[in-house]
Image (cartoon, rainbow, N blue to C red; front, side, top):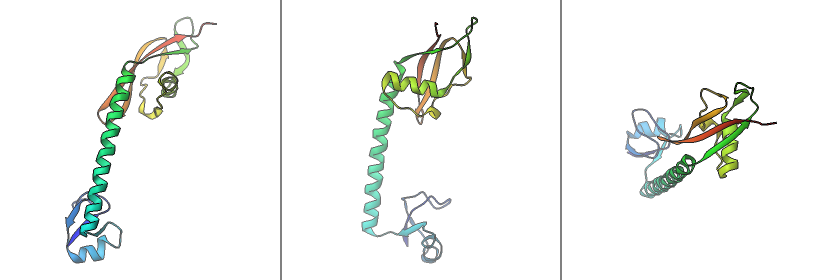
Length: 150
């Protein structure tokens, strides 16, 4: 009996795949738990259409991320912070500060959890801050930290 998996099942397959299973396994285990449904020709066609839509959306998102990476690679941020005479900051520059500066400079909203400021920026200077925009796609934003002049 053919079944369409609704969830990933170890040893059987990933969600959305059509697998051949025993009739009793389908009736007594997979179907009651909502793990699979009977594979009819119409349902198989629907699953294939949904998969094609998902792939197209993933490709659009990947192209958008590449475009953002190019734009961010050309961006130079200037952040001002209070600093002592020796150039050490009173506090630190966080990933939230960098995300706010990117939004102000380029209008791109980036989740602060995708920005890596490690170790924290605690001194005046120039830094390259990596931003994860997708799988295997990291952009570096040049960030200049300068002291606030009173």
